[in-house]
Image 1 (cartoon, helix red, strand yellow):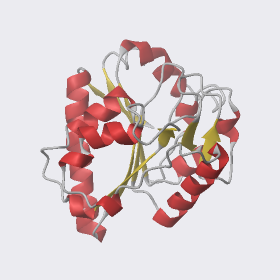
Image 2 (cartoon, helix red, strand yellow):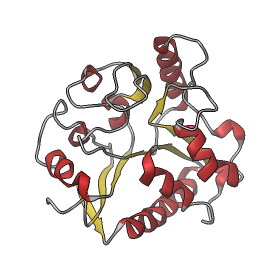
Image 3 (tube, helix red, strand yellow):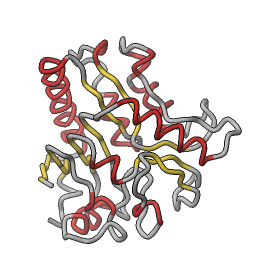
Image 4 (cartoon, one colour):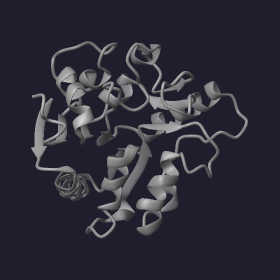
Length: 231
């Protein structure tokens, strides 16, 4: 896991938008498409908003989510709704290329997780999974000490006891994250500095899920100076 530090939050978002724009262009040139799993959270949504005016061939981009809150499709808490408002409804990406994890529609959470795993299996290899990180070193909806960090086999799991509201969520497993070619963690703020240091200390997944993520080709921790203060 390589750390890249930018001066402040705005610089981090701008530099990551540059990096992502260049990667998408490279992937499209190499094989005609780019498959990206995006993330929620304030920095993740700011990053998506920074892509609106970039020169990206959206017709060749496929987007899904590394985790989702299991709420109604129209809820403002949904990562997908926030991403649509920030970016996806503002660029010419085909509707069929936006692959949301299921919303709460009365189906059991376990059935939604199974549907998410099926969606991910049909997608094939993900070029890049974007992740935020919490002050507790959680990523996606994989929280320290909860059984989700130890799940194997499934690609998407049901989370029923999230310490952050809402309690019910869908999340990539560590296996699914680590099957991606690239994993980028985007982290800003002094409140994350201890978690950044813990994740880079060799702590296990139960203590610091963020430290257990590994892309097949590349793993980056993209930080502002405040988040990097403990390194």
